Image (cartoon, rainbow, N blue to C red; front, side):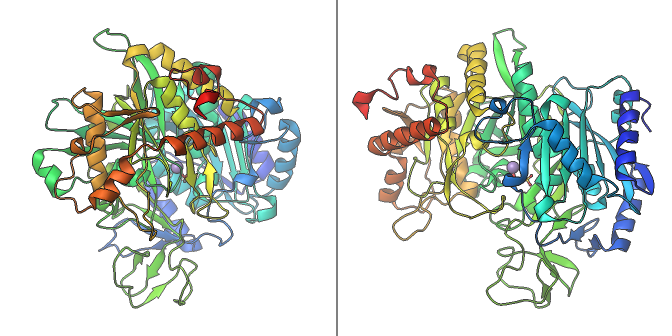
Length: 592
Ligand code: SAT
Ligand code: MN
């Protein structure tokens, strides 16, 4: 137990509200975790999988109404409505607190209350933040033990942390969709979530703390919390590893890119990719060790992966499959009853003979066996390509930032911005087709600036200005900014670019650009590769189609710029003047 009086007061306040029959403090120890796993199998919340094939692995089936984030039920509750901007739902904090406290009142009756002190980031690092999650769900508790750092060192550091930590309260209640709320109180440094036990709504260290609240803290304290993977890349032409951050909306392949396994052609040449993070990056401007100005360094605040099952297989992401082969909780995947393992569409060509779908029901034709947003929760240490820098409390130096989205018909395979300001515009202009990670229609094009539309916890126009400010402090050491699009399709609707391990060819060009090892074709709206500079050795791709996705289409950009400008104006804001006045002027009427 922690003796910090602020912690004890809050835990006792929550206990009085939710009225559990017992309180258990989680310490991350093997023994205690094993007890929780046993309890959860007894209660039916988890199913133990075959120890011979999937050691330490479990299957969880959620309530079928609770399978994704619910953006319509996600609120930022702060004093002034204008502080949250048009991308968030706002609510007055005290009224919301009253409303959800009523829902939570007595909801732990006959249940256990798990208290989980955790650290996002390395315990004690200047990058890190502390939190305490209270939950009545053993499933949520076990996921938190994987996704965050929970150990004795966290307990120690809490003793000298006064009130500097985030209160995270989760109540399963009865999973009532109409009374589901995920509420953030930035001014109170608190998250309160009721009636959902799905990852993004219930593992409160993740999207709630590490993105929505952290982005708000970052704005106040001068750093960035981003929906970004972090990868390490070694190439034969540079001695030191380089680090890249990449922002994509949920379900666009961040985990696959972060764990990319180079194909034979590149592996033999000495290319290596290591993973530092697959979903969230916290970035700070720090002095360079050789005192040559300021650089941007990033950590992954998480301690595990919450990856999408469907789409993960030997070809797309063998490293993720290995990562999820032990000590993993699978959620809403199909169950192979013959051998006690799991399955999802595309995992193997053959559908196992005896199989139950994600709801635990018999196979039905034309229906999903695994839910499209089925997930695996695995410890980072399981990852065969985890970077040794994952544990560096000072983070890694970032050379390039990539923005990307799913765009069937627009934005080239890769485009380099002309400078930081133009790069911020590329982040602002990001749009992507929606995926199953959030409830709602899939495949609809929506604006998703910086992949942060569901996660920026404050006014997005202030966020854009914050990015511009960060750029000023970095000056000539600022990472280069790129935009990528793996998802262009031809007239038959087939993907033109093969993606997955072949994306290394694009990363290679990006690193060469950062190292001034290659020139580029300059267009009005950025730099694109000359066809001779993109390594397409052993790649079976139609040259005409390749040329079509390397082209930067001026007319389409002009339409896109106008559309982006209208979108922001319609929502009561504008593109910052600094971007509009950027030379060559992006928004000059004469160009439109
Ligand atoms: O929000 S989750 O953590 O559940 C996954 C995602 O949407 O990125
Ligand atoms: Mn994500």
